[in-house]
View 1: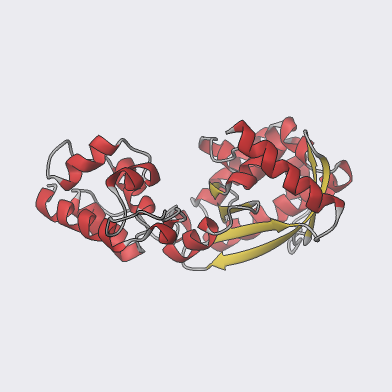
View 2 (view 1 turned 60 degrees about the horizontal axis):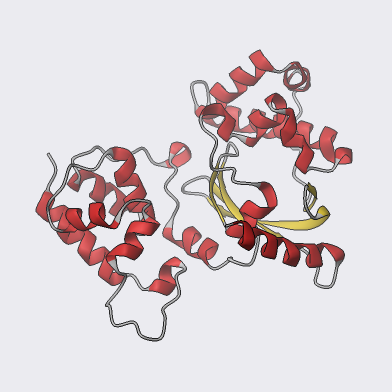
Length: 278
């Protein structure tokens, strides 16, 4: 059963304890509100202001599990706080670990501060959970996919257009890297895991994947320098740095260019193109 009073009190307390800079929002010179405004939280949680307000006022319908997860992410809750929120909303908390898609507050705060940099948070099987605006401008909105297509490796072997974003001379290496990574995650997580299910689908759908899988190659690590071919700005040479959240098996990927390089200038142009497209 939903605990409407407890839920309302918890939401108000969390909203009032957050500051705009905690969630990547500008404070503004005339701000008088303690913490965040309801409309700001609603945007962060991808819901209407009226819906969120009714939750704080102990009114409205019971939020679904998906909506509860969105609120937990929008309010930058820790895993313990997320689980508490789910119980208040009348749901069992989601699993933790490799199947969890809840981004830790620390990793989310770092991403929020990378507004002028291409960056994304991905799961261990290559599902994009969050992107910065410049990340979307670089690779497209990769959070829009559903099902197996959420996984980059799955798209690589089943959706040919995926490869157009990467330099042709890197294609063979990237295919080996995706298969090597998939084998390592399947071995680590075991039969029945999300990684194993994705591998089984690829074995059934892609001859190229089957051939590489039969090589039993492991340890093929990503190159630090990535070569992209963007449809609007052309070739980009970007360095990729990775920050790992071991508790959630999430990876923050940050792409940068050497200052003064042609790729650096193209990233600046891409930031303008991206902002105009919004």
